Length: 145
Image (cartoon, rainbow, N blue to C red; front, side):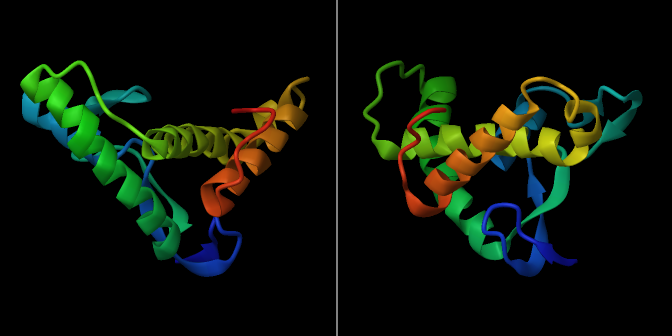
């Protein structure tokens, strides 16, 4: 599906992007039920987490590198080896920001009609722009870090 990549603002073929990182979904399925449930329809079993056409391949790869770093350096050691002290760098901030941004963009894209009348909606738009600038250009957020 060709559309505007929500991160890079260019018309590209979009991927079905996971909102929750795939490694977290895999872990939940591995350690619990093989199936997930959707809050909107709890009786229907899901095979995978929420995916939407959101990012182009280039943007997916930006996020994928940081997700891999987080999974290998923090997530798996914490859950499987009881590690509680971590050495980390800017990868952690980037990963956290990318996850928060995906959650934010889901609300701005799919619930904007509900949000547009809220007093904080203009601020959410500013947050989106500042976070996108960090995720694409490494410009440290000044107001909404």
